[in-house]
Every structure is written in C-alpha cells, then in structure tokens.
Image 1 (cartoon, helix red, strand yellow):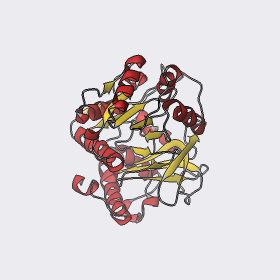
Image 2 (cartoon, rainbow, N blue to C red; image 1 turned 135 degrees about the vertical axis):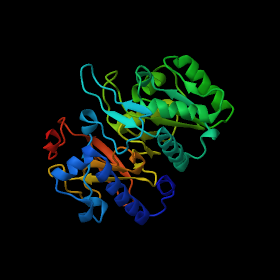
Image 3 (cartoon, rainbow, N blue to C red; image 1 turned 180 degrees about the vertical axis):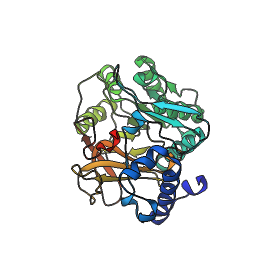
Image 4 (cartoon, helix red, strand yellow; image 1 turned 90 degrees about the horizontal axis):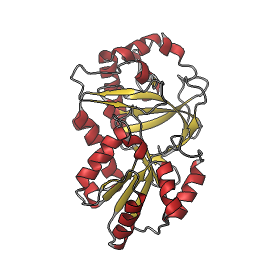
Length: 324
C-alpha cells in the first residue's frame, strides 16, 4: 500500500486508493466498522469518496481507533485544559508518519537539508506526545544545520540567529505558534528575505485571539516578509497541509479536504460552500483515514481550502451516533 500511497499522481488514483483503504478499515477497524454499521453503509454500496462515512474526530478521545493489530510504536496526544479528555492517536508504524511529513514538506518546499530550522514551540515542548514536536524535531535533525534547533524562551538568541543567517543569505524555516511569534516581534523587528515564517496556529490562552488576516498583517510587518506561511495538522492526522500565503492551504497528493453540510453531517457539499471540514488522509492507513473535524471552512475549485472557524458546540451536529 505504501508504494501506491506516495506515488499518487491523479484524482483517479486517489479515488481508487481511497476506496481500497475504506474497505481495509471497514474490515479491520472495530470502531470505524461500528460507526459504518450504524449508518448502514457497506463498502459494496460505495463507489465514490463522497459516500465514504467520515468518523467524527471525537472518537479519538473516546476509543482506540486502530486498523492494525501490530504493536503500538508511538502515542500522540492533543493538548487540553486540565481535566479535559485529550485525543490519542495510536501509531503502529511511525516510519509511515515520518515518510508522510518528509515527502509532504518536500512537495511544497523542497529538500529539508537546504534549510536551517528554527522552532519556537514553547507550549508543545511543555508536554509529551506532541506529533508537531516529533515532526519538527526530526526536520531539525534532518536539516543537518548547526544552528537548527528549538528556541524555547530565549528570544534574544533566536533574534541573533535570524539576523546572522539572514546576513549569510541562508534559507531559513522559522516555525512557531502564533503567540510565540508575536512575542518575538514585540521585542525585535526584522527585515527577512531568505526566511519562511510559518505559524502553526494557536494563542493557547497566552494572548487575545486574532482573526487570521489581522495576525498575518502584524507578523508580516514585524518580520518584514511579504507572506506568512501556515501549517495545518492535528494529532489525529499523519499528514499536513500547507499555506504559502493568504491562508489558502494545499494538500499533498495523498490527502484531500471536503466540506459537509453543517446541518446534515452525512451530506458532502458542493465546492466553494462553507461547511464542516472532512479530511481524507491516506497516511492514516493503520488508524482511520476518513475524519470529520470540528473546523469550518471551504474548498476551492482547485482543491485548495481555507479554514474559517470552528463549531461552537463540542459535538458535531448530526453525528450523535458516537454515544451509542
């Protein structure tokens, strides 16, 4: 399956493999099979990806979502407030995750060895089980650049590194959570020509929430760049989408976003309409590749997408089957 997964070159190949993965997960994933059974959906009745059931993402908080009997190599967990239930993604083949994010990064940005990777992810480093930290740590190692690393709360050292690397005209990836990037430009101003500034979202309660346009305008001014890049990923996914500006995200060839009707969770909408974000991530072969998230957004004609917000309530409307 892996040989096919990272060699997808057409929408037809994606569809064929998605239906194959659906059959595999229907057969081998008890949680997903129960969900499909409650909807009276069987692979023999499904001939296009819009008819595949999308598992509400909350199942990762309630159940072990697995399509494999292999030994669990890694458990990724989401951040959460004290006392809240966090999502857990049980990964039986960590090399599949590594191949997914390395090939995904290469698809959009080229060879990681061309970059010095500076990471500003303080809140993620404060806990174990972050899939983002796992990915960024590996990118740092694979970059093989002496100045690549995590800059936890040492903004002065980070500022000096950025200025030094800029002067040497080296390509840099500065990746960080929104509040930490804002903290940096509160103290230092830059005029970066060779640096990709990438936010991974989230104020994490440290600052007032800003709409994307406002946040990006502040960051563009502070870093002296024309565009702010963004990474869209989550604990429950083994692939990431990237935005190279304007908050418009693109998926690697093995990932696809659709939107569902906000009032009827089982209905996939036409393009360009705002709805709940559904994700097909074929790298999730050993868990579940078909996930209904709590994000709201819209998909454009070329398959790129925007995130507009989140559902207000904690449950995805129309998917109350999860309590059964």
